[in-house]
Amino acid sequence: MNKSYEVEYCNLELRFNRRHIQQLIKDLIQEGYSLYWSEDESLFILSVRTGRKLVKLKFQLMRTGEYKLIGDYIIKDAKLAEFIEKLIGDTRGHAVVRRFKDHIIVIENILFGEVIRLVEVSGFKQRVIYQKGPTPTMEEMEEMFSSQEGEMRLLLLKMEVDDELERLHAAIHNGDEAKAESCRNYLKQMQNRMFMLEW
Image (cartoon, rainbow, N blue to C red; front, side):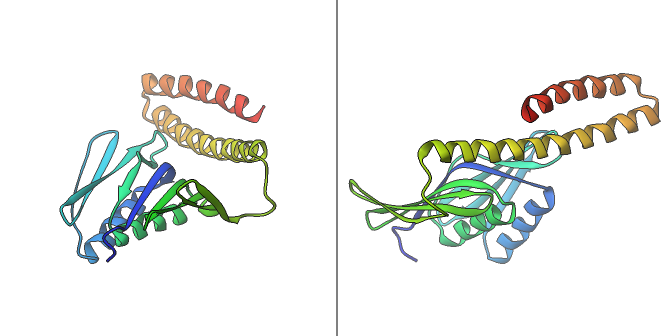
């Protein structure tokens, strides 16, 4: 393995279910990694030993029951980097990936699991290796990202509404009026958020 190998994952936006985490654990164990995990009501932490380093992947439990990988990570193990990139692709996530090798930095902008821009930086020189479609201006890039981000947020919010409606139905069925009222209040808040996103 190249000792200078290093990858940095920033601005991660990956959402997935518990099955993805369980599969990741199985795959890492099969690859011979030493690992352990811990969790509480809001956070699942998967600690992976790579040589003398310990990488702690933090998964935040969302109200929808999904998990979100949070934080920035510097990975110096090629195989572990492959696993993270597979997660980004499988979940159609967003990320900025910086690869460091021999004084050259290659930066990938990933949107919905797909590389949309690839830039090589060497010293003060910057070269665009790949740009999906015609080269947009910075304003167009920001607009594209914010519009797609808005669509994704709306989709996730709709899923969250569905989950909350199920909880409301269960509370009414069980005669738990306090829980039902709490669900109704939360649904009103989400309704306002949906109006703002759709507007």
